[in-house]
Length: 157
Image (cartoon, rainbow, N blue to C red; front, top):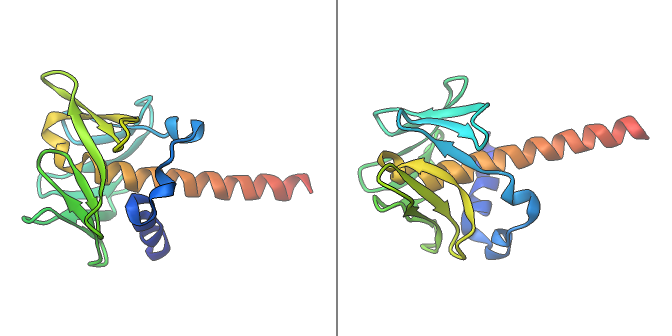
């Protein structure tokens, strides 16, 4: 978990070249519904949920991170990962703007990188969490794909 959170911090803006969008990245989108459920973009897989206490948990109920009253995103071990603003902007620990939200309609907002690439949607009530959740679950998916790729390579050798 500690390694995953370190990687999350890197993905969420310590290094800006990481944000260059690739075709694979475009497929890693999330959706946050009106009840705080976090799903893959197709909506078929529950990734986690946002509680009323601003604590985000994975689908198994394990605490991933929370957002304090000042907007600081704090992981389960107490490490600061970044800062979330109520308007949906997300800043890394260096203060660089990493992700934003933009209203689509009265209910939904797009999750966008600074260049305007779409990474999913969120219900307007969860703008505060949209970008932090995206960063977390995107990195989790990439780690799984990397692990699965290594397993596949081992089978073919």
